[in-house]
Every structure is written in C-alpha cells, then in structure tokens.
View 1 (cartoon, one colour):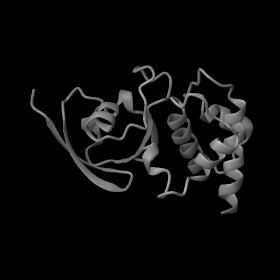
View 2: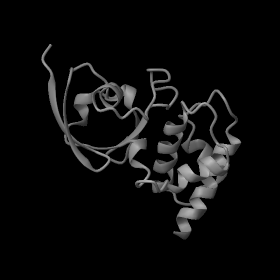
View 3: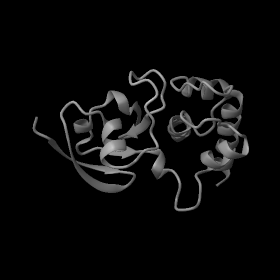
Length: 158
C-alpha cells in the first residue's frame, strides 16, 4: 500500500509525515511522531483518552485518519505547557490531585482546554457536560471539575 504524504501543523510546528491511508491520527501521533500523550483507551471514540484539537474542534484522534490532518492545525497535550511552565489546567490538576493512573488525564486536559477556550466562565454543570466525552476508571470526577473551575478562575485573572 502506498503511503499518503501529509503536511500539517502540530502544536504550532510545521510537520510532514507519510502514513497509510487507513492509519488513524492517534497512530500517527504516537507511532510516527513520538507524541505519546494521547492514549488509546477504547479505539472507538467512547472514552476520550485520545482527545486532540483539530482546527479548533475537539476530536477523538482514534476516529480521525492521519491523512485527514492535511493542511490542518492539530493541538495535543504536548503543546499545552510552555517549556517548564505548566498550563494553568495542568497546574490545577496537580494541585487538586485530579488524576490517578494518568491514562485519561491528557484527554481531560485537552477537553478542558477546549471548553475554557469556548466558555471561560463555565458553571459546574457546563464543565461536567463539556467533559462528558471523557471517562475515568480510577477517580471520581469531583476533583477534575474543581480543578477546571479553579483553572478557569486563574485564567480569567491572567
């Protein structure tokens, strides 16, 4: 099978890669580009562990073909921090102990980033709704919701 040449932008950097026509964006990110933050939890778009933002839209990268990233802007968990400075969401997840095993954490962070970009002052209900596509098997969601609320407050003041 011939590869598909793709030119895209990932976390602000121009990236080119070859992938198979049936290869998912998740596989490309992890196996070809070494961006292992997005995790495969279910492979069917039900858990959100592989969440990324493509052209400003939250997607499950296991449901997007790598070739579909052609000419698009992709944001992954690796692009959230700036050097050693964590994004406020990352910092608040740590402060609120809003993680355990870590498999779902990158997906929750990306989903929360997308939510706060669209709604900088969400209610608790809006946060829960905005994160509903992300599942966690280890912890309750209260710490995650509190971390997002706290980050929203910090980001509004920044």
